[in-house]
Amino acid sequence: MKKINLILLVFIVLFLVSCEKKEIKVGIMIYDESDTFMQEFKNAIIKNLSDYEYEVFYASNSQSIQNKQMVNLIDQNYDLLVINAVDRLAASSLAELANDKKIPIIFINREPLEEDIARYENIYYVGADADLLGIRQAEAADLVFKDPKNLNKIFDRNADNVIQTVILKGEQSHQDAEKRTRMSIEHLRALGYEVELLTTSVANWRRDLAYIQTKEIMEMFPEVELILSNNDDMALGAIDYLVETNRFEKGETYDQDILIIGVDATSVGKQAIKDGLLFASVLNDSSAQGHAVATLINYLMKHKPLDDLPFELVKERYVFVDGQVILKEHLE
Image 1 (cartoon, rainbow, N blue to C red):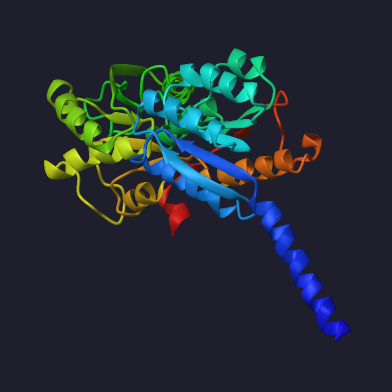
Image 2 (image 1 turned 180 degrees about the vertical axis):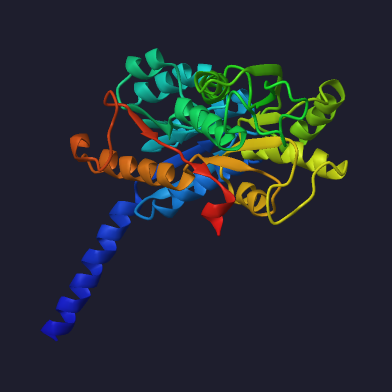
């Protein structure tokens, strides 16, 4: 009988400990449900978040909706919030609301202004090093063009030794979009290439908008030789149009005459690389970033010293994850 009672006591203790863990509530706020990369990022967080209750909230790309969600989550006594802000400039007001209730925030993907993070305690950011993502795109292009003084003639169709380039930009004022755009062009030029930037077209990260804009771009700038896209979804939108107009077709190798390079290396992006439609993508490692977010949550909720984190916490607030160029050879 004593043995049975002891076993029951152990089960009761384990049950109570489990319940105690589950009492911590984490709110995950995502700017829009249609973003492929953010879905993968969110899934990576959840995969590593088994110790806590969580709920995901989508803002349908509306800052007004996200503001209301924020107020509701604070009223519901959430213990920690993971926020992919609709507008990075709204991060300050979101942080202020949480700070009043001493609720930690981990911003993801859309980096707030540095002064907004510095202004409040318990505010963190996890994301990619956006400058490096742009640099990696330039490095991928360099693999093809090879020599600034003698460009690959397959892509330098007009033989002027200048890379006629188009940027598909995520959105205006988005920290990562601005940095990826600037650094991809700057680094190509630093490598010695002469680059003619034909246009920068804002497609708001969306495949459907990039399709429409690529149609307009090809009508205005048929000489385009390189398309650098801030993400894979927009690169795929460009490819959709080029396939539809019989300019691109699937193949075992990349046999197209316009070089297209994306960012994120999403599952659909990697499939396009396998199909010979997308030359390369730069890994914006949603898995590593999601794991970092979950690890940081665990340290914050269990009051562990952040100095013991298994990764660097830059300026005591930032976690940056590097990316790498993904080619077809990496997927075989």
